Length: 203
Image 1 (cartoon, rainbow, N blue to C red):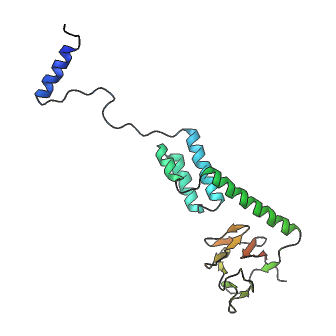
Image 2 (cartoon, rainbow, N blue to C red):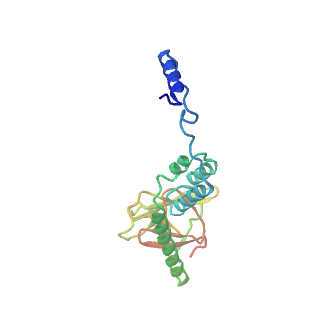
Image 3 (cartoon, rainbow, N blue to C red):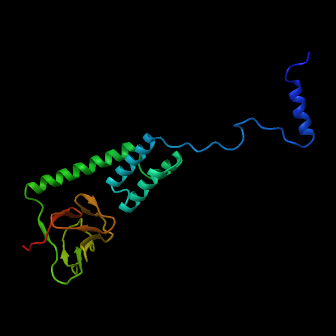
């Protein structure tokens, strides 16, 4: 008994014998197109970038570049690459909560008349060093302060707070300083366990 598909199979076999490839089924050739991200995927990626920036895992420039890339990403894999080096969402939220609690405690101390004031330098001096070293401009005799802990550097737009590789870190309004950060009167700065509020009014 001859089946209905026999002529087709014979034709394909003849083409193969003749050195001609049989036509492939439609849709079976070529790689699948990349999966385009949904609006929800894009929003989740933007949320993780925002959280990463909030806890200091991304600099302002890196955050801006990645947000632009997320808004124009044409594939889900591109979004995944943008957040691959960030902690998971639960870890990021825990870090944000810790920073918020630290800032709340700092604000509470301020309202109760603490911390002491640190007057921004006046005059032509462009660099003001802070640490335990006797040759620093501001000497802090505290075990949590490094010998050369931090500096204030005068720029055209104002002062920049810089950490000098200290052991226990420098903080600005509760956030750890990893790159030079602009400061102004009213900001709280911490060197190790010591915290001050910046002022431009002497004594």
